[in-house]
Length: 343
Image 1 (cartoon, rainbow, N blue to C red):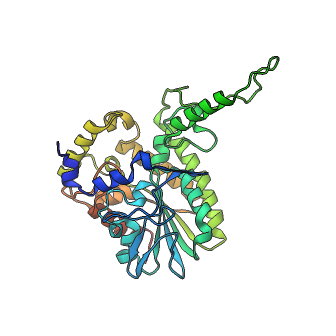
Image 2 (cartoon, helix red, strand yellow):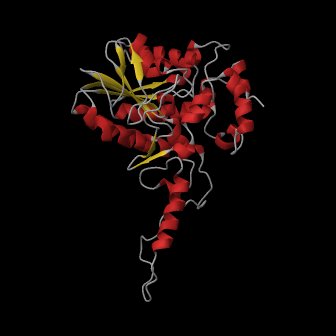
Image 3 (cartoon, one colour):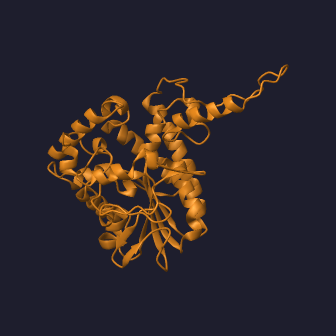
């Protein structure tokens, strides 16, 4: 049966191919990153896995940056541009080509990344870059979603996607290498996290927000220290989630969301994330992030009410609840340029 998803958003076939689990690149420190040197009409990556951005004066990526200063667009899959029909219609490309074209933009989005991985991605590749003028981080949802995982999987640096599988494999590796030593018992601190649902009760929403904000603020402090050395400005933008933007989706969005819920192996989106995807939670999360950013003198923008105010009820903004259409990304880029005074 032909999926409505592929009829309304044919580009998603390419993203599904790009995201083939059997082709995942497992990398030291980062855990995983995009397929390298991927070529298609919809998306293209360089030899390191960064998506190509296209602008007023050409195209570029982390592996092949332009001469002179650049701006970085950091975040997870929304920053990467899942849903865009081409490299030229992602947010960093729209900023470079139309709304803030004075300096080239590089796409530093990492699919399924949390704030730890976003920071590491920059740290491991900053040696490739020319001077950086602006670092715009558009993120937030993944930290909040991952804060729902069991405490045993949070560790010191927060949970990450697929961490259950990782801990299960590491536990199996320890079992294979374990040697029984008669007379010696377990030492304090030997216990390691596993993929089991240890302490599986999900905390209340205030605690989830607190966890996500604390981790985000910790990493923003590092971003600022790194940026201070180069004179770059750091800004944090709470990404627009469909259910944080408006109560009722557009007609095309409603059809896509319904089909995606039927396709999901995990269940209906609201059943999985119902406590954190409400508008009330989105506003509370934004308020807490705003306070954290103000304490560190980091510019903060909540794009959710801004996008809601700029779009009509008929505007088709999303291909799924987290990723936008070309129109959604274009509108988001314009709002970003206006709110952050980017030119």
